[in-house]
Structures are given as C-alpha cells and as structure tokens.
Image (cartoon, rainbow, N blue to C red; front, side):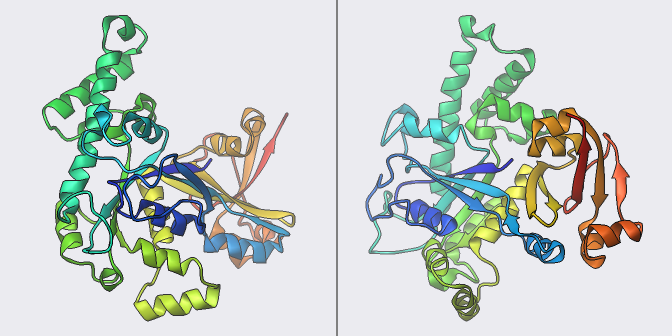
Amino acid sequence: MSFKCGIVGLPNVGKSTLFNALTNSSKAQAANFPFCTIDPNIGIVPVPDERLDKLVEVSKSKKKINTTIEFVDIAGLVKGASKGEGLGNKFLSYIREVDAIIHMIRCFDSDDIQNVNSSVDPIRDLEIIETEMMLADLESIQKRLEKNNKKKVDEEQLKVIEITSDCINKSKDFQILHNQFEKKTLKQSGLLSLKPKIFVCNVDEASIVNGNQYTKAFINKFGEKNTLVVSADIENQINQLENEEKKNYMEMIGLKRTGLNILIQKGYNILELDTYFTSGLEESRAWTIQKNCTAPKAAGVIHTDFEKGFIRAETISYEDFVKNKGWTNSKTNGKMRVEGKDYIVKDGDILNFRFNT
C-alpha cells in the first residue's frame, strides 16, 4: 500500500511549486495568478529509506524497489468554495479521496507574488480553508441524515456523522471522535474535517532555518508536531541538482534534511504507518503497512493469496540482518525467528512468507 496526500490552500501560496519539488518534476504549472491549477496534478514519489539501500548492498540485490507516496496538487480554495465560489465544490470532492491533507500556508512577504488577501496571516488563511471544509461536511451530513438516505447509513457511521455535526456546530474539538472511533471508521465517513492534517509553512530563503514572525505565531497556536517550515522555491531548486551539488547547496544554506524527507516522516507518524522489507538476490523492496499489523495482513500487502494461504513468516530484525550479512548467516546464528498468524510486524522487519495457494 502507499498513501495519498492532497496539497490544499488558498490560491497562489506555492502549492504547485511544492508539488514540483516533491515529485522532482515540472508536471504542475506554477504561475503568479490565482487558480493556476485547474485539474489536480498527481505524482507518485518513491519514499527514500537508507535502510533499503543497505539491504540492496547486503543481499547484492539486482533491483531496489521503494515504497511510494502519492501527492495530489489540488486547486486553490477560497472563502465561499463550499457554495461554489472560485472553483468550488469540484475541488472539495478531490480532497475526499486523500488519506491526509497537507495545508500549504503562505508565511512570507512579497510584492512580486499576488496574494488573495491584503495581508499575510497564516492563522486566518488556515481558518478560511478549514471553515470551507467544515461547511462542505455539514452539507454532506445533512443529506445523509435526510429521511430517505438515513436508512442507508449503518449505525456506527450514523454516530460518526451526528457527533461530527455537533462538533462543527458547537466548535468542539474533533479529538472527541478520534478518541471514540477507529481510524478506519473515520476514514470511511469521507468527512474532510476528520482527515489527518500536516501544516506546511512556506517561507522565503532567509527564514528556512529559524523561521519568521509568521511561522512562530502559527507554531505557537498549532504546535510543532504536525507542522514543518519549508521554502517550496528552494526545495524545487534542490531537487534539480545532482547528489553532490545538492549536498553542498544544502550545507551552504543550513538545511540538514529536505522537506520531502520531513514531510514523509510526519505523514507516516500521523497515519500510523510502518515499513517492512523483503530482501534477496533478485530484489530488495520496502512495503508500507499500518502500525500493529499482523503478519498475514502484511503478507496481503504483497498479494491477497499470501494472506489467504498464510502459514508462517520467517523474520529477522533489520539490525540483525545487516550485522549477520543476510539470510544465511542470520539463520545460522539463531537470529531468524518463525512467527505465526498473531505476530505483530515491527518497523524494519525483514520478512519471508510461507503460504499455500
């Protein structure tokens, strides 16, 4: 499995520039006018993982296959979008399809780049987008609660939409729902307000390392856990450089990690995802799973037949696999374990599945 992140925000805040940087492409048109993006741009990006590089080396694999993340660049939303303003409901529907929302927020001053509002205020801008998503949710909830449609909603989903409606109308914290329902149940509701969120504060080059007044005000209100500070323009420049040039340039401007790496880490954290590996002579490959995933479910990520016919999982930790230089020595030195159907796969496990078809 991979996960899909939708990049949203007001028009002209740098969404398409960030998308191009993340996907290392020029697929998204980036220009200085509102609603430059009409149809959503989609890019599938390999997730960088140094552990996978090491496994290729240890197993002398012919191929390396990263797990992936999908980014969707969605047109800018404006106040009134839920009622059709700007490019309206069409684009709110695209957001319903993603696993997590990346809020792109302008945190820089510029006379050269248009701003849909008269001033730079990241907190206000976020509230505009969040309000439009809540209004869209209310409309969806009202339709589902109509007499004819209510019969089609199962009891658990009915509770979700009723509590969500109460939270929106009474300005309650949505954490109430996260405490009461499983993530899978909330995801099935399709409600925008309940999707996991990452906040990307887009800054100029001078503010990359230490931020600025706008990022400090934003982090003071929303915290650092799901917030990162990047310069979309600088990230785009970095991704156009070769490895050595990239390293030197990042050192020069004081960047230790790319925005892509930080964003992926935060995405994995908020979506509660782990990575396991398969590794051999033919290929070393990374696989994305939910945390606390059982061995059969992890096998099913490769192929449904693996889950149906699961017998056992031969398991080695990443550290033991590297230290013992692969499967053979790990097994000889007693570092390979045989795990059954109840085994909870750990991040970094190297697995080999035995199954019947």
